[in-house]
Length: 510
Ligand code: SF4
Image 1 (cartoon, rainbow, N blue to C red):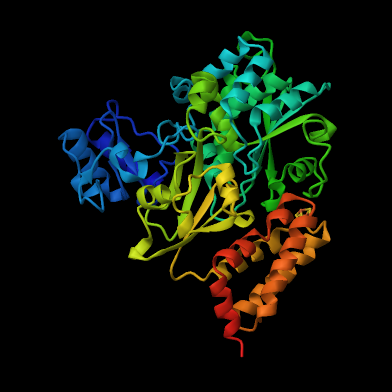
Image 2 (image 1 turned 120 degrees about the vertical axis):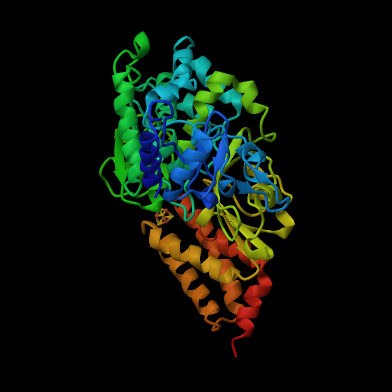
């Protein structure tokens, strides 16, 4: 539909002889999925929502020719009943700070000039005037932590990789986004692929690596296509390849395609898959910084982590660390989904509360229903309830509340949702995605699923609830990798927060 909107806009402009004065540009996602497709008119920033291909004539005739806004396509604030034409005055955007998503919705991701016009590749040039250690120090001081879910300090990770000497080192970008409901990385790659390429080159410069590899799931064809275009353009501009910007530093980027296995998001499994082996995790140490891809020092970062790097170099560590909470700096991108009015992709400063995310940015619960829970961290996370609504979101607070940040999926549930079924849904996913290498995860999760199934069928007993808890503990303690170590979290958090629902199910059993 959006392609048809673009074609129609171009056709109408041509018919009116305006094709040289007005440009129609495709950008990445604006984030406000609920109200898409979106057409934004510059320079006056008018934001038209839910545009249909047949609206093209009216938009050009009214807005461009006559200078009048098309009122029926403007956003109306549901509370104040006011019409808003500029996105920055909409509840959905007001509390957002877009750092990782800074260029999504602004530039044509297939045109490197537009990236360069917004300070693109300037950070790479700045880094060449610094020592590799000085660049690492900036990233360390910024407080940036891994956005893939682990929350490990990025600068420290880079430092480990830089200190290991080898004839060959690698930078790997983990774009194997696999949580149900999560599309943060996809959006960044589709909307701003150069930001990731630039950051990978910066990382390569700090650790002495001349090759970057993006491991991306094959189910992301648009992201793959845009990355391919971006890599070709960066090579053409001398921003990838030999002697970048006359610095003497060589760096190029290749891609590897994942077949959609969730476990390949774990860095050792990802590296095995890149090597053509089965995507199975192995015990750490050795960490990839010491022995990773092809047995060489490798730094693996997630897409969103990389997307933050050029801005930190451009604006400084202090600027970045002033945003967020004590131990979680900057912003976090979340994919807001489920029973919420404003489904979409958001980026908020760390420390924003769940209440602000759900009610102010998300516009509240669909159909005026009551909020029941929000699942953060996908199948590895837990559900947070009414009592957590005022918890500032950061890495540590979410863990303390019994969930986790994960990569950024946020699924909202209302009063009609059954929390036992929700836990069963995630377990079903985990059983499917377990690589099967270790018994607690391979067999234990299956048994957990069977118990949940029995309970939701009304055939469970109170003893089953104790068994659920005990088996969950064993799986967490004895599984080899993060997938198994966190897979019982949805069960445990629903047992803790919605025990009455489990009781109601087992009491149905006569
Ligand atoms: Fe594989 Fe699960 Fe064991 Fe991880 S915990 S290695 S996914 S079986």
